[in-house]
Length: 268
Image (tube, rainbow, N blue to C red; front, side, top):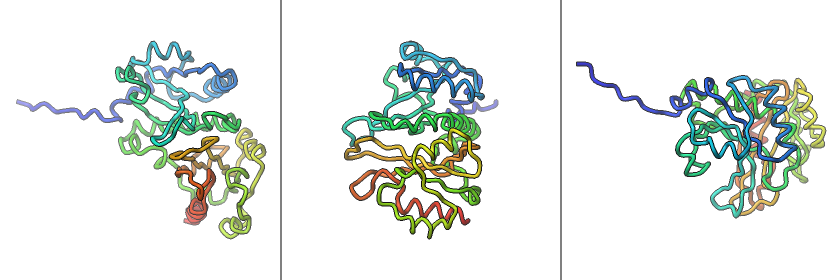
């Protein structure tokens, strides 16, 4: 008699139907973000059928496993007094949604902007994030290692970008950045730009550069984190993704240890 085999219901198994099920893109009522989300998803979403829906529709169907949801959520860390960062998140519907959004099966979340006073930079990066979310979801379907590891393990090898110019937006380095220090780390293969100019490279899908982006609360409190990223405008490869807790000594910028790590990785 053949013995029954138990199936381990891992995350890879649970999201194995992602490409067959409809992804509902949730519009939150903000006309600017809803318009941008409609435009970018319509142009870029390629991995599954998709439809747009309202928050009210989301509340009605969120418990159905027939749908995945791409939506904006405000995240609050344990010690924070209020949500500080807005994320763009891909989740799967299911019964646990009755308990709250945090109990839904999350495929991936990317920090998008300050929750309270977004700078506007998020509109330039939205298309890149939609591509990153899709690529990460597909990789998560391949193995549980990818599914559980998060974006930190998804990043592309920085050595592949060693010939690309590093472009840092001024605000991502902070007011006291040392240009001589940057020259010692990166030689001449870097540039510090005004945020608008740096973001324009993303919007223009510029080739031969990697552009910085930092997401943090507008008014960080005890327990707040900031996220630092490097993104290729032409391919939307994510080359750096790291977070740190914001303190008086460590602001919402690329830290010296980040810059050293980036410089070392590009030389490997």
